[in-house]
Image (cartoon, rainbow, N blue to C red; front, top):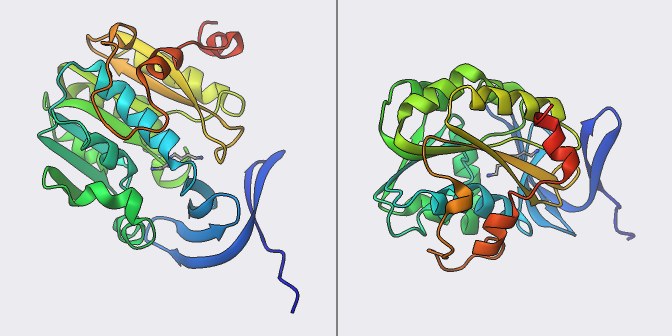
Amino acid sequence: MAQMDLWFTERQNENLSIGMRIKETLHSEVTEFQGMDVIDTFQYGKMLVLDGCVMTTDKDEFVYHEMLAHVPMHTHPNPKKVLVVGGGDGGIIREIVKHPSVEKAVLAEIDGRVIEISKQYFPHIASGLSDPRVDVQVADGIVHVQEHENEYDVILIDSTDPIGPAVGLFAKEFYASVHRALKDDGIFVAQTESPFKDPDLIRRVHEDVSSLFAQTHLYLAYIPTYPTGMWSFTMGSKRHNPLEAANELRVKDTRYYTPAIHKAAFALPRFVEEIFRR
Ligand code: SPD
């Protein structure tokens, strides 16, 4: 019998989509918060999809997880207590617990089903969740930051796209709570989508973060399965400058992050600088 030619398509906006040929769909459900699928693809291996958007794939997950985690973790001189908001697949926590300085890492993920399904289908990504320093909470990250003050060295926002359950994670009030939840020299980073596709979002987040934090820095990484491949991260820092971070690699086993990439990631193409320097 001829093999079926099945394709997954993420419709990224009315003019743009990405397609991947599928081996099989391994899991599909609608959780309390969102649609969730695990799809095995020929090009990128297994892929976690939430509300039709690619969250992570076996083949390129390391880029996003290393760059969201290690840039701030190497900017802070001694990060001991870390909060991850979202990130139920565990990829950010896996990178955080590689840092020997970390005493406690809290994961606040609103959708417990994402955690369960990731442990089942992506054990290599979720591996850090069982580290004894990790406190996994099925909880609303917005409420968590409102209830904690002057507590964290680093806060990372590993959100889904700015639709559905994640909308509040891109709001100025949320960044103000994040600022309060950080210690005096705390740092936060949020994933802020694609400069090609989402310039207005990047500009607005940059403005909001700049009104709250002493320093705001945008940096980039290249993630083939995210819309346009060029991905941005926005950092708010109370004291430490990422461009003055020591030129050292504090962790083993990185595949994308290096001290040279740390610095290079902040070198922005002119059209990206112009997004927020207008
Ligand atoms: N459009 C893709 C945005 C996804 C950002 N979060 C991914 C979660 C991976 N831990």
